[in-house]
Length: 302
Image 1: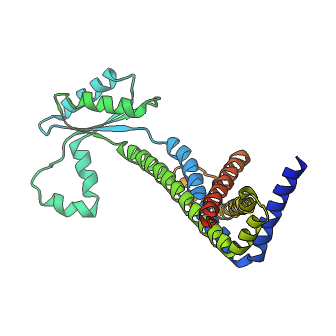
Image 2 (image 1 turned 120 degrees about the horizontal axis):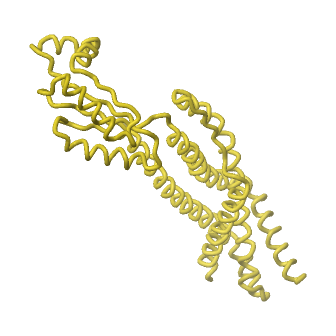
Image 3 (image 1 turned 180 degrees about the vertical axis):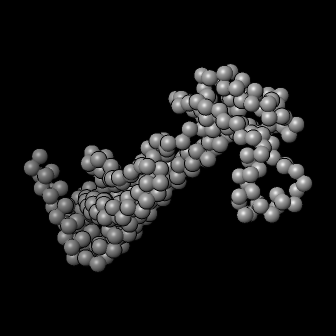
């Protein structure tokens, strides 16, 4: 047991010595890996913080019903009341916007005033806006109602005004997949960096390794310092990445809160908890050590 500990202590001290005696090369490798690790770390912090913001947006889905042009005001009023009673379980309120009201509102917009003035008559239909109640499956309820209302006799067109929320949710899903792919790319970059560094180190110590083998050194004894070198590089890179993300998140929080304030929300970006960071650091160190082992195995076959 003591012999095993001495061997690992020697391998660790040798790895530290190699890193210290090549400060610029070691620092450059650590910074390259740290920067690539910091990008997905910040991305995940943004994603985790944005999801509650989207979920808590104070917006109820609305369904706008555009009635047929030959529908009279009395018929539109009756339809509005009938819909409110028929869908009382799902509808919070129903509002009738008459064609004259819509026309007058549109004329106030200078972009439309000239165009409307050239028309001989009001081209706009009556419309009914249905605000839906909160529900666990709000999107599903809205889509079901929209499908049923589209078959109503006096309704020409149905517009679901919460479609933008679905698009935003789809965007978050896209970002989630993109971050997963980015994390995979980061792992590849880290493996390539450690592999190349260890390969150059092994080639530079080619004669030393050959002499060690001649005097009876085992392959494990030869390769072990390189494994520690990879693991130490991975741990150091992880710590620097956490530091960079910690420095960047307050600046991003300030910018994101300006957007969140318009929805009466507050967002605080934060790093994952310590246990998750520790698990990620161990995983990165393990990947770096395996990359080092792969590299030194291929580079010392002589």
